[in-house]
Amino acid sequence: MLNISFSELLVISIVALLAIGPKELPEVMRKFGQLAKKAKDFAANISDSFEQISETKDDEK
Image (cartoon, rainbow, N blue to C red; front, top):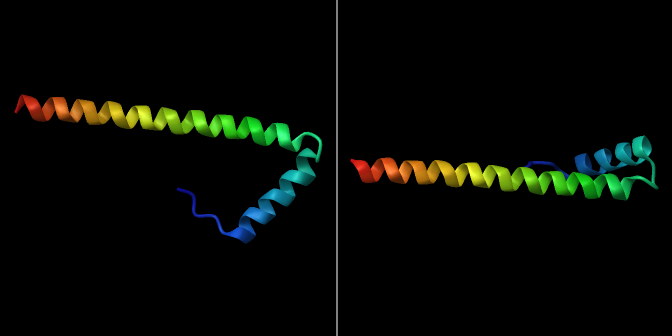
C-alpha cells in the first residue's frame, strides 16, 4: 500500500506532534483513521462494481 520507511514515519509523527500538539493529536489521528477507512471502503466498492460490470460484459459474449 504505502511504502514508508520507519524513519519517514518517525519524522511525520514528530512534525504532526509539533504542529497539532499533544492534546489534539489523538483526536486528529482517530479522525484520520476513520477517513482512511472510508476511503478504503469506497475504493473496494468501486473495484467490486468494475468487476461486476466486467463479468456482465463477459457473459454477454
